[in-house]
Image (cartoon, rainbow, N blue to C red; front, side, top):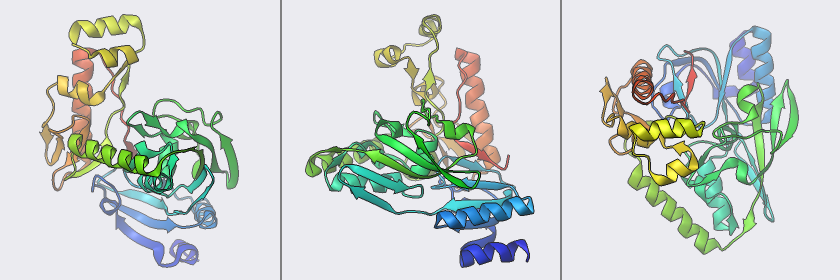
Length: 320
């Protein structure tokens, strides 16, 4: 059987050939995936990965398409979209498959009076991606209430505890392995549903006020900068008027830093740094991945040259 026939046998009409990745990323950027499949069960994922291995094809796996920049030339392999989207709630314990949208889980748990995930209402991606990058905002992070994650490792399902996932700031052990997140289990707290719904509304309003809503964006582009030592903090305080909260927390907001560099509104082609929030890079129309990459390089160079700061991207590069 041809590769196409093998993949069709597994996912049927959910196989697409030369599928523009711009249709599947929040940036609305990206060339064609040679093969694009959507998997709805663990078994389908296992079978597709086995075919890819047997045929010597590269794979890329994603969930919501938020934190990724796909090359204009596309991806010469099999792109796998995780579309396992069921979740279950028993008491205060919640298990969600990797394809569940983080915002949907935040709303579902708040609606029944479970506390701990309201911060995630403004996350653009999925639970799987959230676990991989220990996603967070509004003072909350995935690791805070996560009990364990189920991952696919060498074709087998493995359970990893919170400790084994070795979470850090926008980091987890998953980032440094070939493990694929299948599901996550959270232990939440009992709360008041009406209060929690008000929290959701408040966080959505704050997001609307502070972040661009009207253009393609991958969400926060850079990680906030973690100051490594007292000496470094003193050096930076000579160059920057650092807000007390950032200074005390030893973490400088990337958006704030970009603002200090006077780069808001900077544009290359149709890729532009948002005037509303410095850590958002938006596609104002027909931006290319190359234009976005150039703008990222410009910001990193300015931050390094002016402040000796090495900014690190949150965005994942595909096909570069």
